[in-house]
Length: 233
Image (cartoon, rainbow, N blue to C red):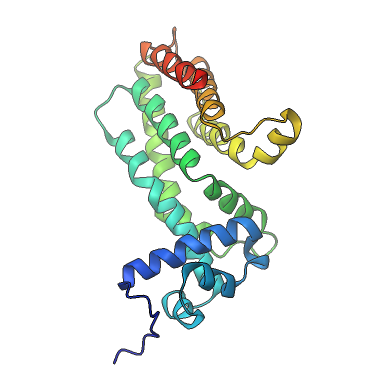
């Protein structure tokens, strides 16, 4: 006997853990940390509440695991692009596009992270520093190196690498955080395939014109055609 509560569903430990994380992502993104209820998470995951505590300890630890899952699922694909042998221009375009796509696939991640930033307050977030050490600091350093290399090669304008990296993140993240306001202002649904494609094309267009030292690369024009076709469907 290992002392683990039975979930009664015949799932293996990893399947059970993933089911809890999936349910917790939905609950935390909808209700925030203070409003989230562990009994609701357990019910949605189809496990007993004791099993939830067995895997994650308490609600705050579960919230930290959710944030780690969010960053951990996106980080490898972005880091791989920045570490590739692609030209600097293509790296930036692909990085921006992959970051946008990752958020479009999981818009609840934006709400989770935005809420965590907002609750940092006087005492600070118990999770932000860990996420920075594990993911975002390294990714920011990689991105800044690519920007500096592109500047040195004459491919990019002389921008401040840190501020430009922040601008890429802001362009992508804000759309998903501000979706309720977009809906209220325009009366349109922000998450249709057409709206998502149009927004991605606009982001790539703005990044290329703000950064590239000359006419945007052919890759940008090609992506515009692709996204225009998607928007028309």
